Length: 245
Image (cartoon, rainbow, N blue to C red; front, side, top):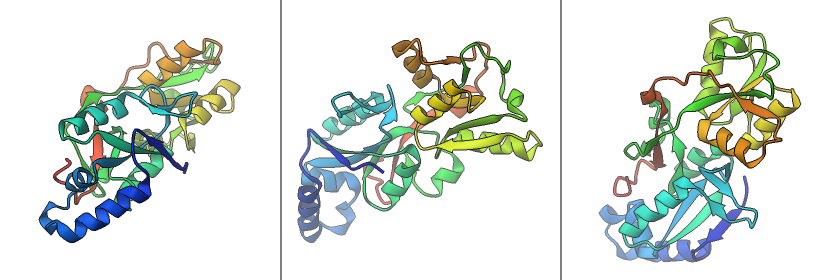
């Protein structure tokens, strides 16, 4: 897990100090994550950091992305102008949220029943379909998830797409499933031929190829994503943070 990235915000120590004082003076009923952030005038958020253009680190080591812009705009409506940002692997976001290290996970989550046991979700913010990536030229002739049977395939940690691959194995697909900390490592292995196929955000893959035509991967042109409802994404908050939700 990477260290905290401070961006238009105060230090975490200052945040904790203000929250601690607020806890002594504010009624317990008002101590949701939003109430705490209003008292401290800063919200501590988390993003995956390696998922351009959704959530990523710029060449200047600044956190950027669609979801971060969205969270900042939403918080400004509540009078919170500053945010402190932690970057970490996608699979670490929910643990960081439930442990209290962050108060708002500003990344794309499918609000599955499994995740709802751990955290709460906002309303749907947009639809984020998956795509299938392969080595440039598609040498293995992969066009759908079923074509990954007997091959090596993966996604990144914490995604429902790892579950999809494991479900195919329960049906006898015999896929060598690999989970990666970040999409960058997944893409590198697909490009090098160490992985036959990968499931990633369609917008991420398209952006990566547009930024680097020599990346060595391609999006499977005739791949059909699952139905729209399964691609609905939301932001995540702790279960004790109904005011923020």
